[in-house]
Image 1 (cartoon, rainbow, N blue to C red):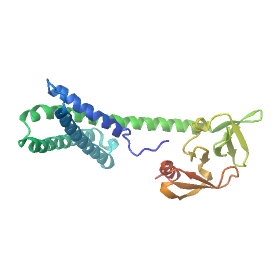
Image 2 (tube, rainbow, N blue to C red):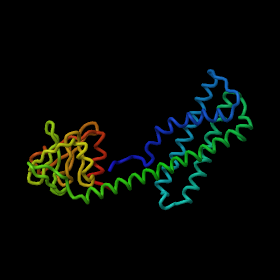
Image 3 (cartoon, rainbow, N blue to C red):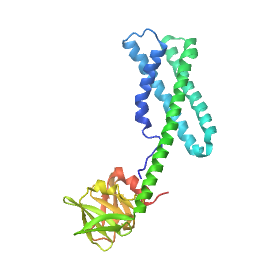
Image 4 (cartoon, rainbow, N blue to C red):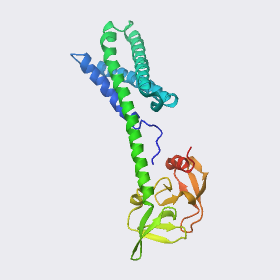
Length: 270
């Protein structure tokens, strides 16, 4: 099972692209005669920056609600309150920054049409943004349930099919201590140190293993949980995983900084 820092991944790159599109679409809806030039570029940049500020505030509110009032316990009431608070917050940021920019640039407040037309259109976009976040949340929940189902199916399978001479054997997951790359082959090693050479790549074999029991340390090694004794911290966020009980796998295997956090969560889940 993959570990994610946010249930809304990939919301950040999505909205970095989506918000300039919203700004451009708002221009299309609001203005009938758009003159391209440096002034349009300047106002578009300001409006897009305002959009980023408002979106980031909305995102922070949603993440706060996730910690204090999850969807599972809040239900429809959580969604309604979230829609109202995020929309009001976003509109406040947009309107206040617009007033500041108008006072600096023109020496006067924003025109009444901004509050009667522009803010109404922007409010609709905040409902869309909320809808996207709610959709992303439940999509990730669905993906996690599918991953759990696949994990359960792998565990029910009971083991990994390997070839030993002319025999096809099933090695139980409890007896399979690890797998490693040896030249052009992937080798599986059991409790007694017996080796089985596989014709599949380590990537393909990894997909057959339950992540509850097995973790891929790097490009060369996948190990069973009962082989792992612990780990020690290295430089730049790297770790060295200490292994024991199998002569075919080295006692220490380095894990990169990018995989270290996932390994710690797998090794000692909260």
